[in-house]
Length: 222
Image 1 (cartoon, helix red, strand yellow):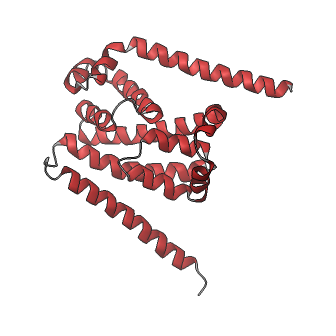
Image 2 (cartoon, rainbow, N blue to C red):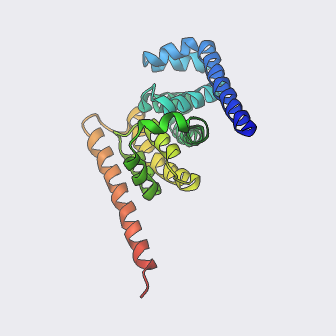
Image 3 (cartoon, rainbow, N blue to C red):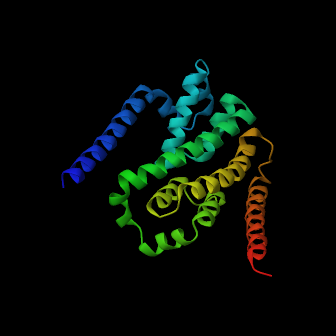
């Protein structure tokens, strides 16, 4: 009983401590947050250009927020990273920070918020995710209409192991983020954006299933 009480108390301290740090961060960066909410990329760049270390840390926290609550559009976050750090570095930092953010949310949900959140989702949905862990995460990452925060939360609530979650997130986010990064980089025309992105994502999914089919056939006894 005493151990359970201590565990509950420690968990609450972690939750409230995290919320307090987030509140301090939002207060200290309220001007930039306002620019982000208004989706003013140029003004955000001007504000962060003077201190690149601050920019790196700030964009990491923003990515964590995006992976937790989908407060800011993912395209906006990637666009600001590319504007600040250039196409290659901006894309890579968006991709790497998204993996860090996904892992942080995954563990937070699994060990801190699972009891509070699990009742909000149907058990049948979680069972499907349990049975198709890697496939579910990968497909959800490359499908544009599935919020990143929802993928992380469902992953944390399910019994999906961390390494398949990280691997699927790494591959899926690389494909999807690269497609999104081409838009602010100006490499796609407005008329071809949607067609090329959807074509690339569908091609990636088909390639994944082809790989899965070949792997399954190789495992079958001759």
